Image 1 (tube, rainbow, N blue to C red):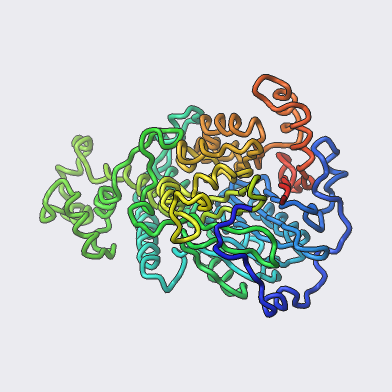
Image 2: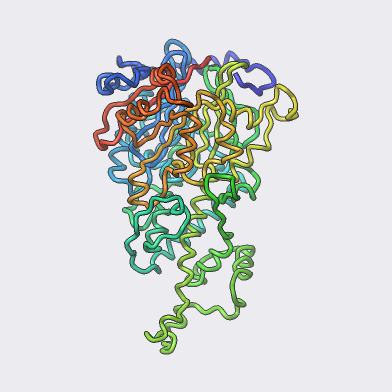
Length: 556
């Protein structure tokens, strides 16, 4: 196993006693094993949720039919017990049948885990990672959660985290307040090329901002939820027996029950510059994208609401420096309207008006808010295997450029020099990665190129993409999955890409197109891959894909 711990972990008698606490019988129903092969009939093979993880394997279950993340990891810890880890559970606001699908997923989670989680990981505070806990609150309130893992950015006692949350809330408040100033939405064209990822659309600016606000769960164009993301986190903190906050670079975390798996914490960074860096430089990702700083967006956005937005001294100074004219020339639109300035408001002079030109910047402010929150993602690398065949499951949340870049600075165990043969760094972790949960639904700026995907060289690499392409493209007008990134993922994995919006027939057809061709996997390789796959039953609320796909990786 890839291990950076200075000493072998020794469990105390007290710890063992805790692990063996009396528990109700969980998931005792008889069910087919998740190792049911790809070529089996899905309904017959997986009509009932598997009660246990596949023996000797880590089983990773991706729930399908959502534009959101929900992953269940199960690791055998003896003849009677699995260690169960849930990473996020949500779907984007406004997705059709989202509540029904999330309740269906929560019901399956309850069966698969016996309503018990050893660890619940929440990567960051976005609706598409949290909504299920609200939509299926009745189910989740019955769960027993031993530990809740969060990034340091969610720690109420951390001063830096408090500043980040205040900044996030201020930007969100500003956008919600300014939403009413937009004109009526215009029809937006469908786009399918790579330029669509960052190029402005012809649709209404209000739609563009509201689409981004859907990640916060507070989009004005969608019916309000009972809880926002902050309230969901508060509920989960109350349900968990223990809440843990993690800072990157610390020694790896042993998992419960003495199982031979450790979790490396890679992000989010403590460095503010890296934490706020979302836009890639040329060649860093699979698209070049540079945007202006936040100051100019705030400068533009406060103009209609100057007296109602609370700004600290640094923000006020930033805005003053960003204004095209000295601050003494600032006039609120309501003041000018009150004077009934006929020359300014005359229809003939309408082309000269500038009071609403800044509204285009609101989309960039919303994009910045979305990206900054993504960059606070708790990033985990689960390491196991042998010294000669180390393996890693990489779960980056929705980490963007600055988060990915920060991983380069860490060496494990702490205090070890990089040149030490026993030292572990990000290059070794990425080279051992056998499963990559693709960040941010395979968007253009959430997978680093040279310092990311290109370093994932393990021959057994598999990728999981939690995406619903039709909804992302036709409804949200987002280029997900991003074409050039998807193409490279297919090359690196030799076709072993599992998507939340693809059916079993789609996987079979892809196999038939690829196998035994030059540079592709052989028939035996494909059969080995399929033997590690399991599929859920048909979803009652979506005909796109089975309820879940599960992939099992050998522990040794």
